[in-house]
Image 1 (cartoon, helix red, strand yellow):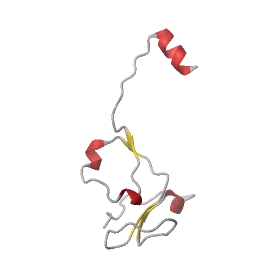
Image 2 (tube, helix red, strand yellow):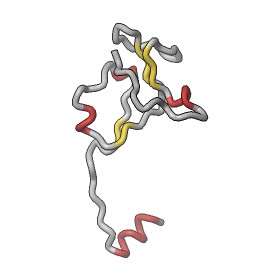
Image 3 (cartoon, helix red, strand yellow):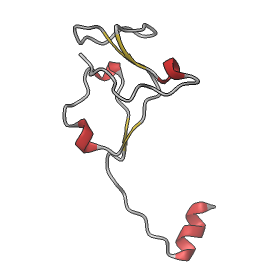
Image 4 (cartoon, helix red, strand yellow):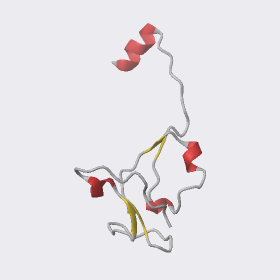
Length: 84
């Protein structure tokens, strides 16, 4: 429905590459230029690392962790510790 209505009204869309990215610990690393590459960082899965910077195994909580499941009912801190 939306596509047909937008086209019939002449609504133009702009494709923004890397608008949303999703890096998980299994990606190996988050590129240092990440903040300038994307608008939205979407994370479905937790990002779990050891303090040595190695990704944790599947379904393991790391010593450094970014997982939305840790913040049910509360906001994450404004200043998160940087990843190792």
